[in-house]
Image (cartoon, rainbow, N blue to C red; front, side):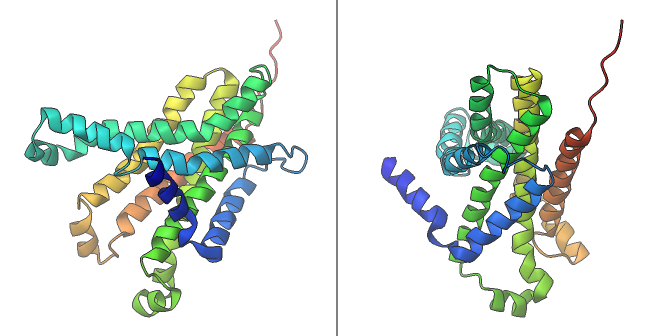
Length: 271
């Protein structure tokens, strides 16, 4: 298990190269700029970002497809049901797996925020909790994008061939997905950080995990072929529908959290 983990960590950066790492950093910076974190006035925020980034490979290794947690859940499933039943009900029985996936990944993102909250005596302004959560989410998202780019480039993808095959816009599509997913990771952790500061830590943690599960469910719908007929009928690319769904979901969640960020605090009421 340790050797497999070390190999997975090496794979994180093996094929991304400077281009993949640089793009991941740019994606994180663009989304994080919307939350305006005081990174210069509060340099300890960089430690929050780094802490979340360090936990990213571990969370993916434990919770992603073919990883430890899904493997043991499916082992339990096969103990009770046959392969035919599992295939027939795949959209339903994957819900617990995706919820566990969200719990692990949102927990990894939220861990540095919780450490800071605990060190401050469990007392911090909600908007500060939101901003700290955004920083932690961006740290996770950047490392996730590096992983994505490693998988993309290791598959043999090149810009020249992609442009010749799909045109300039089609060649850019593989980078649209990590961009919007980084935005989602930033927003979901910002939401969890806001809830933690408001005293609703576990409630908002479950909310963020559920939002994460919805994002993952979009991928599941695509993987089982639910969109194949629709994409062919509309003449879209193979991944267009799922990319549209995750993009809309990422922007909806980000918009709601940014509204919280910009909302003015209610004035105190007199007696």
